[in-house]
Image 1 (cartoon, rainbow, N blue to C red):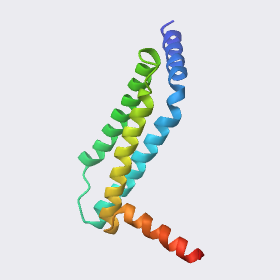
Image 2 (cartoon, rainbow, N blue to C red; image 1 turned 45 degrees about the vertical axis):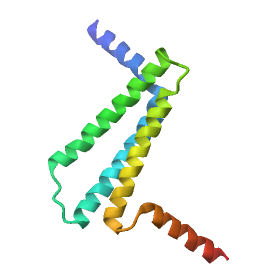
Image 3 (cartoon, rainbow, N blue to C red; image 1 turned 135 degrees about the horizontal axis):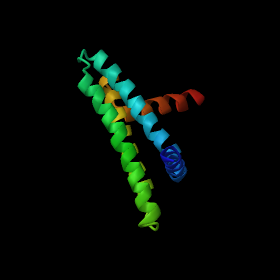
Length: 128
């Protein structure tokens, strides 16, 4: 009886949150890449890697996903006329991309934007 109720509740929850699957995977991917670049930056700069810093990544993953879920539920049931989920996703994506840029700069010593500009200019000049 209880097992059936729990399994039905789990099925309803998964089906309710299924539209968020791609968004949660995208944020998870960005956090994972940020973790890898952060570890690389720590190694390049001889900064000690501690379990506390790694725990922050797990907390970030949990908090970001809870933010997405709560914004989705608010948008779906309270304010369907405001795209709260998309706003939250854009905010979280901006934070993670900024963090990726900072880690890239710690590794290479140059800004990610300057690197991309230089790369595009080189490619355009090679095609001429």
